[in-house]
Length: 503
Image 1: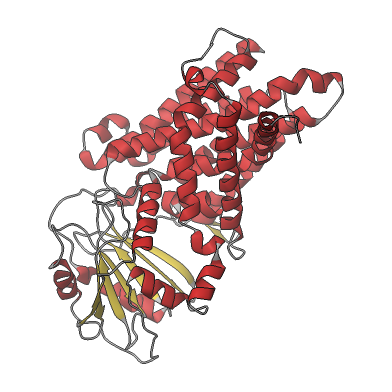
Image 2 (image 1 turned 90 degrees about the vertical axis):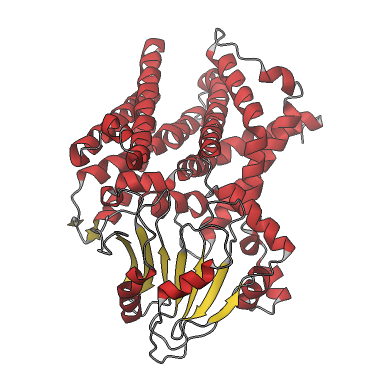
């Protein structure tokens, strides 16, 4: 222990940041991108850039998919009908041959070409909360540990910086790099502190059943189905292993909407498709409210008879669903969405400047003592900060380069995109340790090239350049994506130029 409490907090803040900074940066970066996961989907899946408007799509359009899911032995079929952020019908089921994701044109009912990518909702967003580690819930546990560390960093940071109000207005850009980096770290920490604390705490709260599984096991004798039914006022029943039909889906949707205020899109979830015990859940997307748990009605699939309507939500779960909604921001609020995006990037800057300050404050001493700590941490910092940005932009570039239906060495197009991401990311660590003096500059230059290349390839392969996209409302997300990439290219180019001059 250090001689004073503040010194102990400084030690804890420093080493928790150094040890877990790489993991925290990856989580914050992917979480920031996930704010616009549906828009990234549209950019990476040009076939889904459909003209919005027209009458609501008929629920009967998913009937062929129900038959396919039943034939594949799937336990469910999920269908999300068009929303403002997703103009196509999104179908998903998982059978004996694996998971199937399909998009359908709501105007014609025809299946769109296989997008061949997991894009934002399938890759970037899951990476944020479970790192794509499938072994049990290990990924969620790692992210949870990092979340607890982030809370510790927030609290210890407040203890260390007693003059927090003064530091909000302190940024000495004319000073030496070490002082400038510390000021930037302090300013981003103070400005983003409420957001970073709340977003981290809410991320831990919404996974309470994972981090405290004994609570459910004890209270419900290990019956997780009973926990879901009781807490979320849902309905479920087991399959009978006998074939069954499906009544009018439009009639079920109409009946479910009778108690709703306004129209809007729907989510139709079919459990046990093709089975005599199949039932249909009709609910509303969480666009007009923060609480992600909306109205829902459950129908017998064969007869269309109403089985259950969600009415009584337990207060504790209502609060938990509100916290979940506040974290994932799936409700319709574009201004707040951009605020989340900006504050998420601020968190990335906070972590990056923490790395840089540690390096600058120890570089000379470690060189004098011939220690390897600074070169090791610097390579880790470069790969964690600029490296994951390079990997993400390479993910975008290869998406626009590879033709639909491509396979290589037994891997399909979506898997090849993911391999590109991870190989590119690993390569940035190798580059950082092999070329330590030029790593920051060269990787910033690589970011600029990849970001500009992604915009150019989107224009070449789809014809949707920025000017055209801004002229068509349904292409505004594409324009936004291109403009953000162009801004990233400009900032990375400026950073590379400044680093070259400072070398």
